[in-house]
Length: 80
Image (spheres, rainbow, N blue to C red):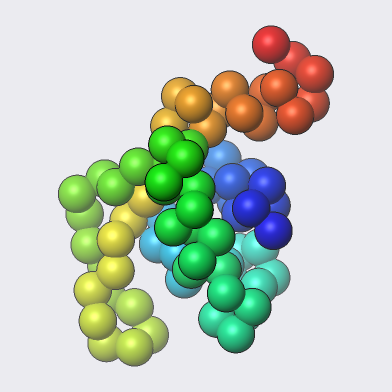
């Protein structure tokens, strides 16, 4: 799931956890928000400082793939 979500950020760099989960076909019940948190902890995505209103009515962090995230995707496809 994490790799799929990272590819989601690569397709449209600035997204909330909710937006990237939707784009990748995951539901909230599948825990995509936790995998997004894991991507951030690993430095593969970073907080842009922007917030967007989510379906819950609460503001959510907008994330962007980092250089380390791009490198991880390249390495996953054999492109150093």
